[in-house]
Image (cartoon, rainbow, N blue to C red; front, side):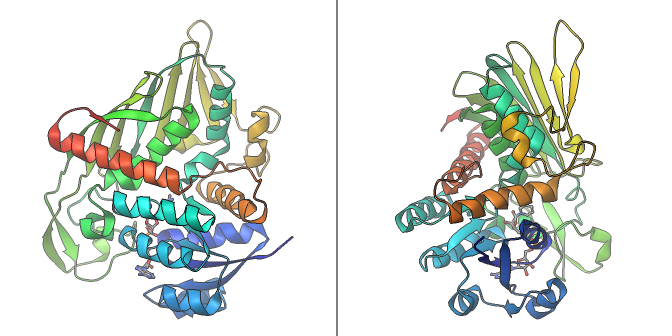
Length: 377
Ligand SMILES: NC(=O)c1ccc[n+]([C@@H]2O[C@H](COP(=O)([O-])OP(=O)(O)OC[C@H]3O[C@@H](n4cnc5c(N)ncnc54)[C@H](O)[C@@H]3O)[C@@H](O)[C@H]2O)c1
């Protein structure tokens, strides 16, 4: 099989996950990494032959087939545009950019260049999420009436918790919505097969100012690791409560928070149909709960003999062996790389069009929260 040459830009929390997932594919060679900080040290740690502090220099010297953009959001646009203009495929972390205009420009550029373009909405690649999608497509749960759930974390609970995501010039004008809410909305639309057509939102910022550590802090690190702070104003939401209308008339609601004590990274998706309901929770990704009215509810456990035929490709390990976050990245990247090798390969991953759509949803939710009314897409 052709060995594909990849380069990873930004080796913080998620960049390391990209490296590990790619290595599990077996047909990808990571030829270079880029980071503004400690690039050499990181390359040594991950045994990657070339290290750069400038993505432009890396692209011009190493000439990878594909780059993975794992840097803070405000850098995605310029890095993606630079690579696409040099005929390099792009896999970008979410959110795709910080503005709708930038996202639109990248969609056009990627199409014009006929290059592979992907956004890492990896939750699509949990085997049981895929099973739910296929079950719904088969019509098993009937007409979808409503879609609920949310995404809850607690790592920004205290006013001393800080990260670049709290700086709107780096993360964009919405925070919880575009950082984790978009994961939920992408999954809800992907699994249900229904697009969101109208939104209503209430945003709350619990901490109007936060204590920014004087030193750089990495994602998910704890406030007590630092002692010197400066007080900075916060202009993005810690919490979003959203109401949704889907294209078939179904209604929905989601609660998104990064300040919910005890919930570390909890994504829940509940889809209620006219004959039964389906429920997935990221705390228990091996199981789907099937809800009935006239018989006992069922728990379907990930198992090659029981999962939907079309979802078997996402099962790497036997029943009882948990597959989660890192495995979803592996399966997502596998599809992206297969579509580089074979133009007819299945594309279930989020493309730049999907990345743009999530940006549009975030924009409309922001507008709704400001105006206090329903907004159509
Ligand atoms: N798909 C997911 O589940 C998921 C999870 C976490 C983060 N993300 C996304 O991944 C991106 C990175 O998030 P993170 O949590 O890993 O952040 P992070 O702060 O942990 O890491 C970012 C890294 O990028 C480097 N960097 C910053 N600017 C750079 C530049 N111009 N050139 C090269 N390197 C640069 C930093 O030094 C740092 O090492 C964000 O867009 C985030 O939304 C996605």
